[in-house]
Image (cartoon, rainbow, N blue to C red):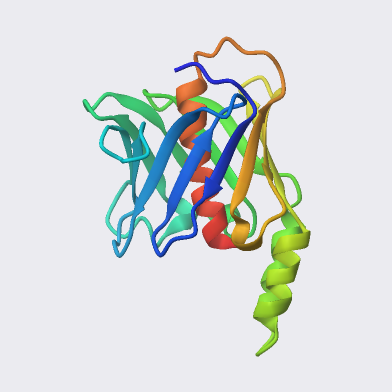
Length: 204
């Protein structure tokens, strides 16, 4: 898998969680569908709009792992069962700010992901807790304030950045490559950041 950055990830207006990924040329890279009404998160990746050709699946590890988001590990694999890697939440710190490790197929650390402005989430959570009007204030805050997430490699160098674009219901994100890379990590990065965006969008 070789990707042309920047990538655009956009959620469809739907009762179900569906996400389209396109590259810098506007070409479709993936269609993402999240299984709903399940105690264990499951995400399916397709290469076509009709969702007839599934390429990958991602599942939270362990019973009720989807509910225990602060310590869940989400495994990523191809349809033949070959592991790609995993997105591992960094324990309790994930409760107040995004903090994840992106692991390779053998569980080795490949990247770390952090929220560049974790205090924004705390403010939004406080606004949302205000009775009656809190939801409306938080919705406006969500539209006007757009967080970013930085992906660093094992050497501590910033490799990618995820931007939430201004939109209602947090519908649109972009991923930019910060330095030229060989492309060998494109598959892991794409799928790991899809998981990141799904989880962080749920958190608000």
